[in-house]
Length: 264
Figure (cartoon, rainbow, N blue to C red):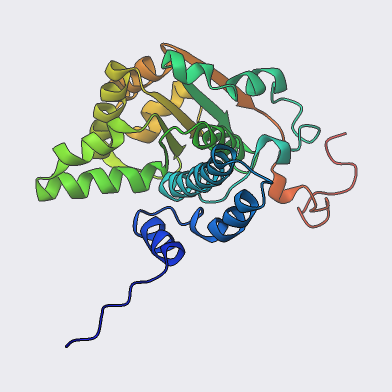
């Protein structure tokens, strides 16, 4: 006769089932809650509620971390990290209103204009971070890199699929428009992207070191640049930052090659 099959205890089987179902936050809590219920310190319903609350919290954290990875931020900074005193040209009330994400509900855009280093990307990432925390799909891309990506997919015949990715994002952040030359073909692709998102009422944040009126110069096509600006700025908050570069704020006049008293 074969020996009778030995089964695991109900508690071990329960733990195995919970782990197999992906309820990894609940499984370690079961022994403690079994004891609490047995001792009369918890009823079954409140024990189940505590454990499922823990599982939901764990799932929310995992979802937030996944969206943060997918957002492709070059760094993570919030508005709490922004030095408002150093950049008084930034309208704090306007930025904090944007952080409520009402502009995304309306499908509006944001354009941040200023010289390199004044905090444009910091503000854009901070607004994107608020989007991630509100469970929206956010994607950050530098303009030249994004255009190169679109051009590559166009060459391979897979552009239609790539359009769907960029269209699907609740918030697309395009960093440093005008910083690098993207050529006429790149400008055409950028227009198509902006136009698609405009039709779908998807919000886009653009940072640029070039005034909107000069986009034709950097894009190499005044007509295309005008069409891009027309769609981006139709429903848009434009913030112009005129302060000094953060990266140079600790550099003295001598290091900058400026004579003491010059410009006074």
